[in-house]
Amino acid sequence: MFNFNLRTSKSGRAYSPGVLIANWNEDVYLEEDLLKDFLFRRERGELLIQRTKKLQENLYKKEQLSISKDGFLHFGDTVMLVSPDKKSPMENLPRERGNLSLAVTPDEMAVHALDALPSPCGLSAIRSTAPMGRNTFQILSTEGASMGEPIRFGQNFGLGTTGGFRDRMLFLASDHKTFRNMAKKSLLQAVFLTDELSYLASWQASYLDPQLRLEYEGFPVPANSKILITHCHTNQALAVPRNFGIRTYFGKEYEVVCHTYLDSHKAEEDKNYWIGVTGNPSEESTTMFDRPQPPTGVTQERSSEVQTES
Image (tube, rainbow, N blue to C red; front, side, top):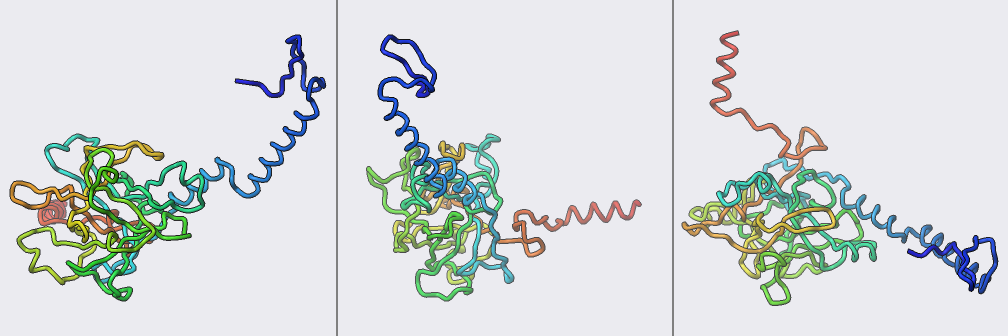
């Protein structure tokens, strides 16, 4: 590695910066220009370390989820999309278990060159279920429904996110698999974020049980319950296979694809299960995932036995 502060004469002897040799005046002006360029970029916040800090502040900024008063999801709600803990025998390893949330995964070099999320932008599933700029999405209407109306099974809707930047919103989208457009690890249908709210960014919620799916068509979608999210254009369901880990700027995460996994009974597997998580009405800084579960019948019997013994 070269030391630009070390000057060398024609004979090869090293001199300190105070000794004027060769084109010393040109070297002095170049060093002054470099210092002026550094100060100018620092004032405008264009240094790499400043952009990295801004990126982390936006993506990891705490977000407030919407609170559902009637127990349903509505247009305009800010929610987290969580893939619940898997119990498949092929994915019973401890490192593959746990709840995963859908999150924005921008390319590092693209974000450092821009002041907002690039389009198109990548997605991944992360282990954090704390609401922040990366993993919060807003439910949008694609058919003219007014904000505040409940979403119904079989109704088209969009999912948008700003990633904490607040400059513009990107929309969750997908398209048919091609040789140039496919998931990198699983080679399945890719999922991405785009700046155009078109039919490629339209999704539908489906009831979990296929035998009762037609009966629940048109009913409101419950919040904090397992549902299927199906892409309208390709009729493929959003999924997290979990056996395809990817390396991102934020560490090891999981690939998100658009593919319907069916078991031997032609029912969707737990890879396609999603939960629209809302905020906790009792505490603003928590979600419904943090809310304690109500006691079951066994728990109530045990508590009553303890009280009678005491």
